[in-house]
Length: 503
Image 1 (cartoon, rainbow, N blue to C red):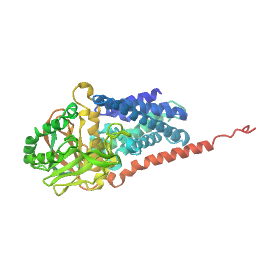
Image 2 (cartoon, one colour):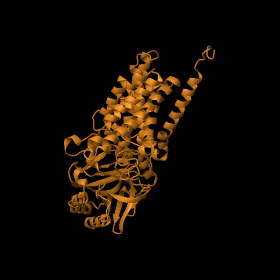
Image 3 (tube, rainbow, N blue to C red):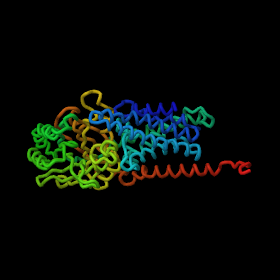
Image 4 (cartoon, rainbow, N blue to C red):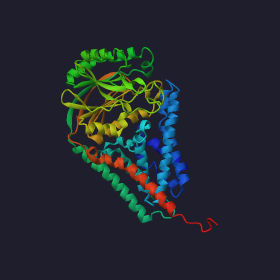
């Protein structure tokens, strides 16, 4: 159990904004050493403990931010942590089945088990899906290390990171059956060569990739405090904060010949009867089209409900180009609660300016591989991520969390996977542009109102991941699940029969 606790701490310490990103390569080594040769109950318990401690710490930002607006966010944190703890128990089961039952090499078993659960967590749980903070996310600190995502995606990078951790466990193992001294040297050299090769190939891609301009976009960051975005006067405060910046946005758009002005998630509070009129007034003042995050009303099972949306505002009116389909469980989606948000229909990329297709992502959807992949398949030329991270970083100091740096790191991974440039605008940051190589450029300083210009670049053609590489992450959970079940069944069939049984 000490190994599970140590691995949980290492995972937390490796995550952005920590400079210790390299800890991701060894984070699972203590856990793996602890469960090697353990029986199934102990493996399951160790996996559950690993996930409980890791996610309990990593998701503290939910109650940390949310307790200012309601005690229910504490319940959401507990529910999410419990759900992920159960997945940790499944991870422990996979580890035991593949190592002790199927007798697979330890590094391969660890990589398969971890990635299987990581993919399940992000896409197999329906409304409880939570694609946040994958094992490979710390590598976004070094763009050279994430270029492989253009081939096998984030799941493939996580597989490689877990494989290295498993090799580390073999190198440190002192049990019978551990590699010989010569074998340890071979493993160490192979891991070193693999990491060096991945960095070298990434460096080549960074220096030789051909990028093309996708146009300029003006970003408006209102920096409305969270307390001002709640209550009866929230709409007026949000409108006032945006309108104070519109003249600067108009000047920046004219100078840069921007295609559009981008406003963050819930730039308008609501929905309300004046939403359309306000957007048209803003568009007239700005002089160019707007891309804005606003709440809209949708017909749902329990009547009219709010949906988090992105609209494209032209002279002709406002049209929804994205409804949020990935809701944060326990925060935006709460079972049997009529006041929670509702997921909308999945829309295709929208045509902006007659020749540019934009795929919009709302808030945490930047963490979802499937949503970015949907846009890339739909012919998007770039991604636009609108968010409101005032939950994660603003005065007082105790509300600030690591999630403020973790959130934008996901968009860098999506950009590399899809080969699409991206622009991100937050209510109070981080507002930045991202190249298809995962290189990030801040546009407006965080935690203050301002206007900036994002010169977005993209790639021509499709990445290998968009074409077929996504299959890697899709197949691993099924393969691991089937292999684990079959290994357990074969092990039961091999159990010795007691000759005295039945006497």
